[in-house]
Image 1: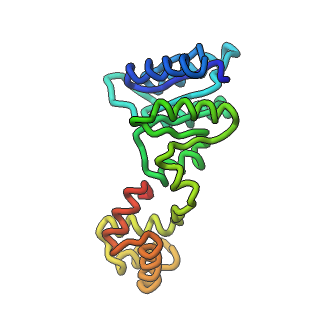
Image 2: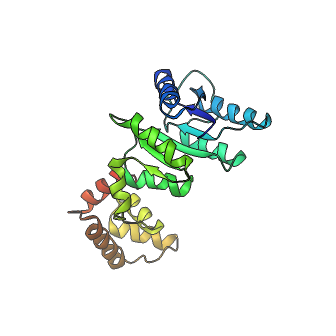
Length: 222
């Protein structure tokens, strides 16, 4: 089992709760805590310098603003900074975020090993996540797992994201086409844009363009 764990969470009660349950249920004795991303990063750096690195980082995604000047203000920034200096550290995110596509991006873009949704079963799932990640398996909360395994999340291309962003900003298809032409983005004809939007509406089972934008925002795609 992991020997040395760092928990980054701005609420002290959650920090202590995680430390206690890890001790009780997994036997991990050394669990250090940090309420600021900068402090968590410094702890990781110091541990590396002392040749006693952390095996696992458990972090939230959002951290409340404070009077302190901060360089790292989010869990994602912390993960990226820590993995830059310690690429082999295991990472579990413990957060309220529950949009499948957004969570999926943390695995592909940040290379995390586990994701646990905070909630009624959060701490129990966190214990299972620690066990699975220790055994070189990935873990995702049950409420998101079905979306992952079904592979039913339509992957948007950069072109699609740009198209939907302009549409959400109130531009008409003709205006988007003019913009694409000026930026040399293809396809840029009004008919091509209309066909692509129709395909997106079909894939997302959206009733209209407004419904499509709302759905992609809910999934964390925009």
